[in-house]
Each structure stands twice: as structure tokens, then as C-alpha cells.
Length: 314
Image (cartoon, rainbow, N blue to C red):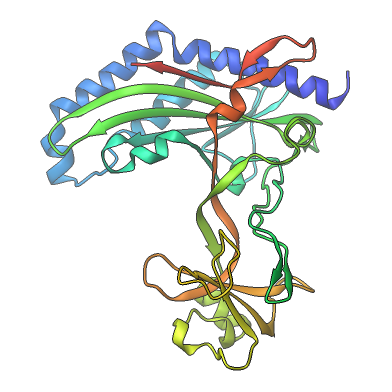
């Protein structure tokens, strides 16, 4: 069996196994006990400890317990570039992250699967490419995968899953709404089945931090927009999502006056911080959004259908 066939079958195998224990009577009972504990200690957690996400740590602990109880774990993945839980079984490397989302204030996040570079093994096609930003061929924004398609030491496929628990915390009461499980395709699968086109957009971006900028050259430090020399023609402001140059919604600038700090034959992209309005050197995507609907309809090597996204009310 080739790597592709082996990987898609393993993705289904462990999707079924993980979903089985997430929807088991024991797991749901333990999750209910966490809900009851948070409800009965709400004031203490909210006021005394000022814990905004009261579920996250308990959810991670619960997931870890059931992983090691149910999945025949043979070893721990040693890399620091990984999901919350990363481990070997006797046929694959599995990465699982737990995601907890509050419908009060973060309800929009519940519509997507959110991933970072340390949680995926596929290299998506760049987003927002444009072959004419003031005469420049802008290649777009990348999100470089941090996980391997095949783990080199064991030659096992790397599988990625996300357990989601969605809740509502309105400042007075806490209730769990539903649980979700997503299988984000391995790089081999993403390339063949999805043409590496899975990312809808970016929630956050990766920037050159100030300490690194100072060590490289002060010209890379974050700056105010009015500090750019627009008259020279070397700075081209544009809207990243639309590609429109000199748009009233411009949130980025291509800079051909300085060399890119890390890439040859690439232009420096300055992008606006949401927090303070300054522009910083953008190095790529940091958190990406995927559509659950895209991942739902999957096929195994025998052309049998299975669901790569599942959801259940609590």
C-alpha cells in the first residue's frame, strides 16, 4: 500500500477511535463533572482567580487521560513543534489539540477550524497573491507547515486532529453547548485531494519581533505609517485581501527600498498591527481558518465514505 492509501485509511481509523471515546458515556460523564465544578465554583474562578477561559486546562487534562487510556500509545513525540498532545502508536504519529470556544464574544470562531503551523503537515497555496501590486508580482502570504508528512525516524504518517468543546460563559453562568472533532488532512492527502487549498483566511499573522529586528537592522523595527517615504515610490500601500493599491482600506505596504531579512528575491511586506496601528514586517500567517464543511466528506482507500468533521450537542 502506498503512503497516500495508508494515510487516508489511518486518518479514518483514528477519527473513528477518537470519536468513539469522545462520545462515550464515561467521557461525557467526566465532562459533565467539569461543567458542574465550574458552575459551583463560578464566583471563585471568575472573581478571585480571574480565569477567563475556565474550561481550557480541564479539557486538555481530560483529553490526555482518554488518549492514553484508549489509543495504545507507544511513545511521546519529542519535537517541541507539535500539538498539545503528540505521540506515537504502532502505526502512526498523532497530534491532537483541544480547542475551547466561548460563544459569548468568540462565537464566530466556532464556525471554523483554527490551525497554526505547529499543528499541520500540509503547505497551503499562498493566500492573496497578486501579479500587479504597483508593477510588483506579489507571491502572497504563506503558512509553513511545522509537522512532517511522514515522521522520518519511524516512517509513520503524521495525523492531525482537533477536539473542540464549545461553551457559553455570560459572566454569571457557564454551560457546555457541543463537542466537535476534526481531522485536518496530512500533507500527502491535502496535496492530492484538496490541491493544498484548505485555508480560507488568516486570523492572525506572524511578525518580526522587536528584539530580532534590533539584532538584524533597525530599519526592520515596527513603525508608524507616516514614517514611510511615500514620495520615493518604493513604498506601495495596498489592501491585502483585495489587492487594491492606495485603497482607503490599505492595511499593508510592499517595500522595495530594503532587502527582505530572510528571503532572497522577496520584497518586505509591512502589515498593520491590530493592537497599536503600527506597521511591522510580516513573515507569514500565524493562525489560519479552515472550513469544517470542506473536511466533512472524505473517502478511504476502498472508496468508502467517512466524515472528517463531526459534531454532537452536549
